[in-house]
Length: 591
Image (cartoon, rainbow, N blue to C red; front, top):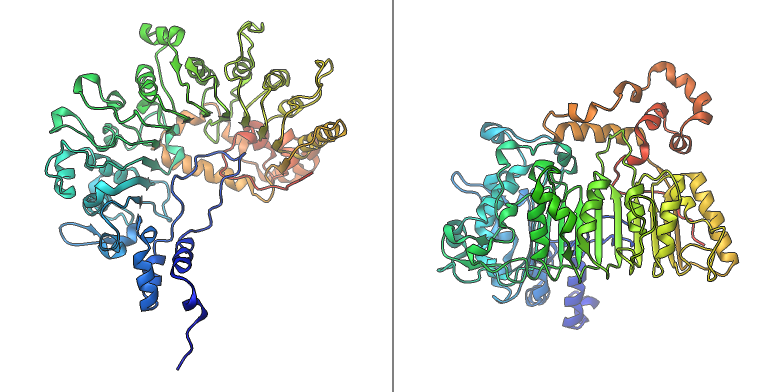
């Protein structure tokens, strides 16, 4: 007879907590200086609840009585059960319907991505027959199963690489008949998703947004915000009154109906939104200026706004647009975090000028131009405006637009001089955290002590507590000198992180991968991007290999530090600091 395991002697509450912790995967929490949005739900091991429930009777009882184990649903291609007529999500993968009470909220993730995807889109229904990844019919089958729990949805995340499944989901969630059929709601005048707080729709292909037109073109027509049905479609129902977070990445909606027009008498689903992200949209599906303004005005509780390679578009010749730009402002008194990844710095500056957010605490600016762009978008005017300098170079008499900033993150901004950034930093009295990521030497030099300091301190940002810099070696050397000077005068930092650009990476190979992904994603419209790029100068010949060592001393600043194999010509002509990366791997220097 075997003796009982020591784990069987644990209190039920402790064993239950161990099971809950076991569902968490490595979080890899985002550091304060890293760019990108955080997930609103933790990464979850969906197989663990059923696994521990099969170990023994005691564990099964504990697992089934632990409600937190059954509040997460993850749907992938492997979970789809096929039939000749209608695919369905396998109910056996989530037994929570028999475990948890009807009032328990659930978080749903539909992951329609394919690890083997090659950045191509299926063309037409015939092509989809041979497609092995998540298809529109799979998306509809998943929703048909999940909609019976719609009254318990707390968050819904849709991830897709090809656009067809996303398009199918948006279409299904905007049709009253589909929702009513599978949710079991007898009357759509009721609130069918009273607990829903977060919606995330993400097309996991950032490259697609750099096409001048949306692709696939047959899916360009926008859908309304899911679960919000207009009066003409059927009975009224306001289904997401508690929506707090809306993330649209590469996915566009009918901006004219977000929020719904006043004449529809539909309560706005935007009234409670605190986080709004618009990112990676093709120009022809971006919201028009008046639609963008109306959307922001419909979100009075907005505390975080993210505009990454997206935002409003307007016609400079249009009188209405000109009037909005010149005289319209949007008051966002609750806004605390603003993240802007611009494709055109002057366009983004016009958008920022409309925002009144005096209590803004965190500002994130990034040059989000496409990865193989060969032109420089000088951010001097944008930084000058943030620092209170008028277009004619004179200082403004009024206050800077965001005087309460405590955290500033800058990435890949092009600056030719240090004065604009130095002027901005000198006016941010409350700044405690600063990140300068992959920028030119003048940006680093803006941190140097001033020659004619005010009475209190000659150093920029005397209250700074955290500093992060990613750059080439000679830039990091300058930062080291600045830090030593600050330390000598008693200005200590609580955290310093210096990272060497390109450390441990094959820059040339990554650029080739970027170009290939971009080419496959824009539907054959690469001529638009290559007009100003001398592709021949980027591809080194065999003769160049022998010259690389001799030319290394005379190569451009970035090529000198990164020392890529035989691609120095590319770095000089294409500005390597504009290449897009997900992460920067480097060397930490902690004082």
